[in-house]
Image (cartoon, rainbow, N blue to C red; front, top):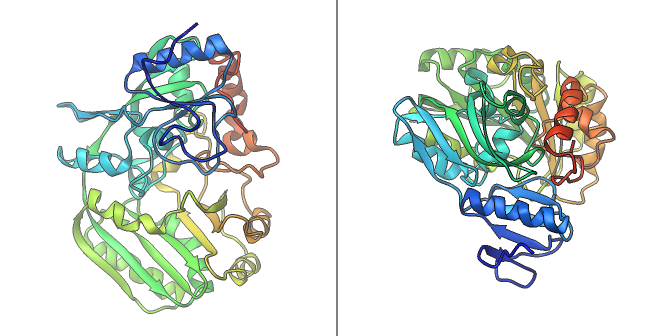
Length: 410
């Protein structure tokens, strides 16, 4: 019988174990050998395993009576002379950005400090530099993975190429436990931080859908809309004059005053945390979908009419470098979309489903893998589109006994 007593194990009733629903065990892994030990125990007991990178997920994937392999202790960050960053799967963005900043480097990734680098990357990775440099997973050049059979493999373009393809966008916890990721970083740019708020909504939303996805790659501005307030926010690597000209074009087309605050020459790593409150919160109820074109005026008006209290519509611009990668080049299949729309509210608010259905009539039917949605009728097709068949075949290859299983897994 495999003995886990030498590892950092939390069981029901242990301090730090948490509230229900919960797995049978949480094992805090501090090394690859710890992960291998967990997999050996799972093989012997027949228990399911879910990796947790230390961040958050929109849905609970903890297997009842199973094992959570908590990787938060594996969070080292190193950068070599060639600008390749090796990052442990337990690192969060709140530590990744400052660490890379010390080397004058960064990666295109998300905003929230608590976002885990592993989950973000494995599901794609959308952020304020993405329209210029692509998804977080587009910067991935290698990864270390513990497979269901307990083998430890290194993958990259020239090694375990099928697994490497799948890790770039299929979502976390599908094929194995990723313990380490390697990224080709980019020079950290100084950016113009952009934020503006208006009471007007309908014309702003309509104009944003036509304008933001087609803006220059160096300009990413998203839109958050609540009752009586629309907030434009983002960052630009363009020169300040060009940034202002593009934003003046936007406000002129939307028919609103140019009331935008621009802060110049801010290091990118310092801009990201300032927008964390505008990101979707893990504690909220979120549904979302990609859109290949603008919504009709009637649909836009209907969505805005339902905004009361803490309800929010969040628009994220795609286009640019996101869409200059072929749909089948990586597992992330959503390469032709113009924007992502999220409906966000408090748990239990029926408006989220009502608003999603209203928008869905004009959506692409595609959903970001990092925003799992348990209400989807055909989730695997929504997440993976034309890449699903290849991913399903790889699932059978790398995890034939479904050791890594959870609702909506491949």
